[in-house]
Image 1 (spheres, helix red, strand yellow):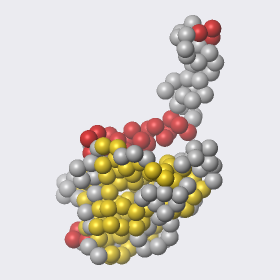
Image 2: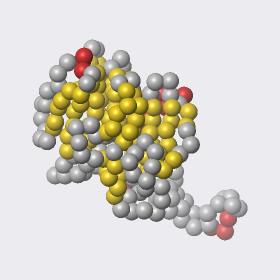
Image 3: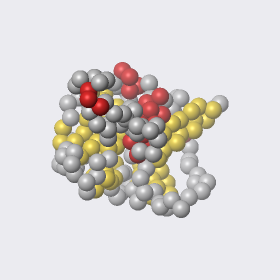
Image 4: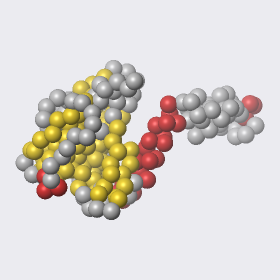
Length: 207
């Protein structure tokens, strides 16, 4: 977690003898590395995802759960919630790969994005997709955007999702929750597909 110097193996004979470039926090305690921000995002997600603790990992496989052979997926199976970690099979790849994600949900087998388009995995990034994710009694059937956090407030649940610039994202919930309304933002598409209500949007450049 914290970078340091172990000159002459004084601290630990098998440790690094020079600056640890893999640490999230650099030796002078600055927190400017991208890795630090990513660890915080993952920690926030896992904090509100108790189903992750009891999920069981399947063996990773290339070309499964997606239509791209260049991508590897690890499925973590829970009692109802499933987690899918998607990354490039070759970890040194730096280009982007477009893909469709296939998953079994409480509403049957689906291919995402549902209204069309494709998801994108950039370089050495990875994606944390989930299915049948509990939001305090509301079933989030699938989001392609990653979950930052959520919280139940009275009779409502507030969910915060995020995604990279120029990506297409969507989420789906049971249609019996009622209609959706766009409060702000552009390029947001709403529609029903079977027993689900799907919201899709484009992530635009921040200003």
